[in-house]
Length: 595
Image 1 (tube, one colour):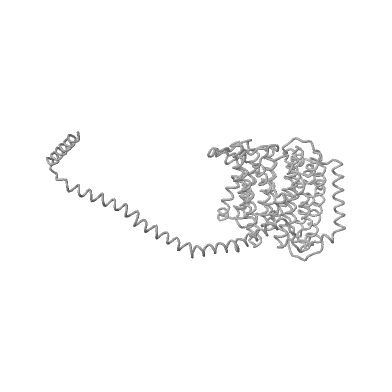
Image 2 (cartoon, one colour):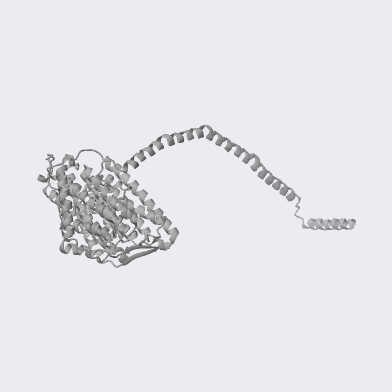
């Protein structure tokens, strides 16, 4: 890779800044704070200067492509860099340089995956994302966070191994051409391709391999959760859209995700767990759009990913501000907080109405495109499932979450508005929620979509449908508010299996396996060691008395024979000549007598 291509790559600057964070802090903390916003701002500028292809390196016969840009790449680069800027503002008050290093390495991995053109480069950046984001969980420095971080890392390591197995098999089947990160034909997909898909699906939190998300995200740091809600799952949506559009499994599983996520969000008590489950639901819309595979549905998946990153980050920032200021995130412990944190309340409500698809917000112009894509593709079952999930979205995040945090019964919990930088970050995200929702903002978003599709969200039918869904959902909440009152309990999910499975594994390792190991040690000590020593003594005797005696005896005979021959040598040449002549006469006499 040339120096120009290296400096052109936006991930380079995040990587360098990540490494230099401790140094900048030591020089002056202000420099570290400036880097948090200067590097993302530079990256936003750089993505507009990128050529279609750059940074190709030949390494051991493999072509590693670090830069490949088209419209699908650009829309994700655009929102990722904007989100990095918002995240930089939001975490500016965090004093730990290690936290910023982990966040920027995480962004480095996401940008690297988005820009790469081959599977080997993708895998390196993919694993960088997993390991860097783990530290955003661990940096909360609580027992539950440490445990959740280890589970998160183990699950993503397993997913990475599945992805790597698929890459190796694809290389074995196709050769060097198989390492190019391009669209895979669904009719000719092999086991290798499906293994790669599973690796991608794990990061997209597709059930049943989704439980790592609601397990880890609520345990991350306040700022770490904001970064994590934006990058891992949306990077997975990008790679699925790049490699697997039109795969039926994605359409079905995506629709299931939308229902599954909101079902848990409705019954959850912890605010960040509600939002984590809602990531599963909203990413389900995107996965379903990729699986449907039409131009309309793929555009919808990209537009919804763009909008979702911003309004979900806004929601995580709002509840994160509450957690930062009060130390609480459970709904049953909060209430009446609008008096103490009015700005956070305003921003959280904006995020809630945006994710619910209110007109004039980004959710209205993005999610509806996927639903319209399902209708155009004549998929009525998917259409109904996606519409039902919209009801659950408004019920859980649009109404339940803000009501029990900001309104409802006053809990008496003390708090105050968040730090200025946190409010500024929330303001930027809230601005985009409205900016993308109508007029020039919507046109700007649609212009970045990968396909040219005529879609007008503000149709009378769509407006009527939306108002009916929102109105009847609000009425349902009003009638069932007592039933939906939060209570402090734990809802079981599929992570129960690997939690219990890990306990079984540890029991097997500690009990039967350890007992067998100790038994083998005893057997070796009582039988193995004496037998080994006896064999060693036998082989030593054989070596000395057998091999050494034979070899050394032969050597002694040779030496003794040489000594005798040496004694026969007088040094008188006339004696040697006479002996030779005498030997000749003896030989001739013997010949004559025999003849």
